Structure formats: structure tokens, C-alpha cells
Length: 420
Image 1 (cartoon, rainbow, N blue to C red):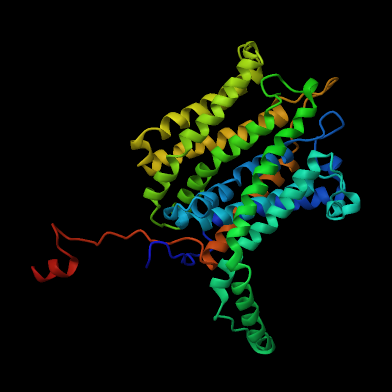
Image 2 (image 1 turned 120 degrees about the vertical axis):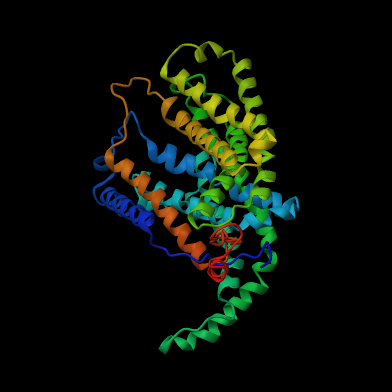
């Protein structure tokens, strides 16, 4: 098999682990249904003082940032023509597609009137002065682009293999013609969609950082900054490759495949520069605004800021600058986890830790239903990803070879029997 040829992974969908994940997903779905039926007030601890919680900080803001591996890897492989990274482009795009899909599902839970989510599709309801309008439009269009980029995988899987049974057999020829049409249209122009995806991602990744710029009196000085859009964009770009490494290592271990160590090591070599650029702007911003005293005040906010910087930025920069760490799957995975956790913590810090209402009389802690929905969505994403890679050509699967059983030095069981 060619090193770059993707094939469906041969594995069972349900294992002991996936059954547990499935059970958690079902519990999350029940909590989600409860929220839709009985309202956001009944299902959450949100109120007029705390209008958003973990559904925005984790499901939306963190989810969008961690889905950045799709556009960063696509840009590296298809825009900058680094062909060696094509082997991990499909898994990265699938992760991004599912990530954005579940971001939208999570956002529906957080919208008070979720049934009005279609309004931005009507030009008569557009509001060009709203940052959320720009984020919503970009996410909607980019999600469409991601599904278009999934078309080549769909065509490769089903073209020439459509064989519907019974009365549905009449649709076989129509399905084949449709797949051929897709192959001659969308697939041939997929590079244009990849470029469009990169542009759209840069737009809404930065705009998410703009949301809190309008609340200077409600934000802790360590996170409130006019360059928040730039910091959000830089951190999203920096987490893109580590997220691909994180996903690739977990997938290889789950399906008992050989990890693409050489490719992942080369990918990780870009991260110290990207993360270092983000760190430089972050520290420069803190210094120019003269808010270093707040980092040493000993508050919860200052502690969370130091954890975010030391563990989420400096530690992985140092680790991934070492060739020995990049050559080790354990080292790559550890550093990737630090970057992923650091960016997720940054989004939580910005939207929850740094935020404080002017006249707050209580504090916010998520309700059990909020936690169940968030965890359930994550589990659902994992299960859908597993289903796709088992049934579609996404991963270049290279099973781990089992060592031959030997009896004595260099003797197989048959040879050992003959020598008795």
C-alpha cells in the first residue's frame, strides 16, 4: 500500500471503551433535550449577571480554536505545497468538520431562542455592525466549505460501488451519475475551497477575540486588550498543528495503527515558532499596557494567568524545540496536550475567569445539565469520528505488526518441534 493512500480502518465500532462513551453521550443528549424543552433558565445557572457559561467558553470558543487544525494543515499541504503532510490532511479536515458541526450544536443550546438561528441567512435581518453577525456568517460559510472538502472522500468511497437492494436499485445509476458529476465539478475545484476556508477561518478566529473588547470595565486587565483579535488568531494558528498531533496519536492508539512519527515530528517543528510569536505579542501587550502588577497580585485571576502562560505556552515551546522530544511519540503527545490545554484554558479565562459583572451579587458555577451537555457533545464527536474513519478512506492505515512467536532463540514453534 502506498504511504499516502487512505483506506477505511478495519476495526469494530463498539468496544468496551466506546460503549462507555456511548452511554455518556446518551446522558448528554437527554440533558440537551431537557434544555430545549424546558428552556435555558431551567437547565443552567445563567442569569442576567452571568449571561454565558461553559457552553460559550468550552463548546464554542474553545471548540472553534481547537478545530483550527483543519485550515492550518490544509494551508501547509495545499497552499504552501508541503506534500509530505498530505497524509494527515484528511484526518485534520474531518476533525475540523466535526468540530465546527458540534460547535453549532452547542451554540443552539446556548441561544435563548434557538429556533431563530436561521435569521442570519436572510439579508433583511443582517446587522453589519455586530461582531457576532460576522462570526455567525463566517462559521456558517466555512462549515459549508468543510463539507464540500469532504466530497472527494465521499466520491472515493462510493463511486463504482453503489449497489442499493430491492426497489432502491433503480437509484443506482442515478447515484453513480451524481457521484461522477461531483467528481467532475466540486472535486476539481477543491483547492479553491481550501483557500476560501483559510481566509474564512482567519476572519472568525480573530472576531471571537473582538467579542470582549466592548466590555473593558467587566474584564480583568490581564486579558482585556485592544489586540485581543490578534491574540485569538495567533493562538488558534499555534494550536492547529498540536491538535492534529493530539488527534493523530489518539487515533493510532485507538485503532492499533503505526503513528506517522516522521510527519508529526516535522509538523511539530513549526509549533515553537508559531507559539513563540503568540507569546511575544502576549508579553509585549502586558508590558505596554503596564499591567504586570496584576500578574503578581495573588488573586485567582493571576494564578490562572500564570498557569496558562507557563504550562500552555512556555513549557511546550521548550519541549518542542528539542529534537529528542519531537522524535518521540510520548514527547509529541505530551507537548500537544499542553498546547491544546493551554489554548482551551485561555478561552475559559477570557470568557469566564476574567469576566465579572459590575454589580455582581453571586458567582457562576455550571449546573449539572450544562456539564452533561458539554461532555456529551465531546463524546458524540468522538463516536462520529470513529464511525467515519471506519467507513470512509480518511486515515492511511498501517497496522502495528505483531511479533512472530518464537520458542527459543530465533526458532518458530514449527522449527522447534522439528528439532525435538
